[in-house]
Image: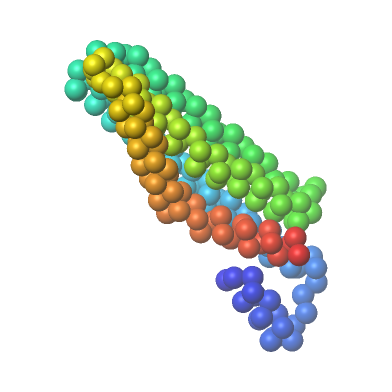
Length: 187
């Protein structure tokens, strides 16, 4: 149920809710949204692990000369992303509904999620661009540097598009819910 619908039902029903009851409703809604985000983060991490395994397998299948070095980079980036997911999980779940007001919890949760949302859209395309640049250099030493940069930029743009699609599919609904509740308490 959307907040405006909820407000409309309050006005139409003639029943008045106390501030504590309304905060309790928003607390339940916020907890539910955080739980959904946690589930989707786990799915996102699993997809990242599967992608890393496929990329490492691909480097060995095509016989890259520096497959161990590239594989190490992929593993390093995967570990970095896993640390990112862990930090995001810890920050989103540190909400203390008993010692903080619902307004503080929602504000903190929304701001934290928004930072990670933006970071996700920056880090993944940059990692894809850097990996593709390294791959271009590994495949052939005769490749023009401008061509390698062009391929890297294209790879970064593809990474941005893929990240956008994945982030919207996985997190957009929860992001909008948090944003809506946040805006309600900020006004």
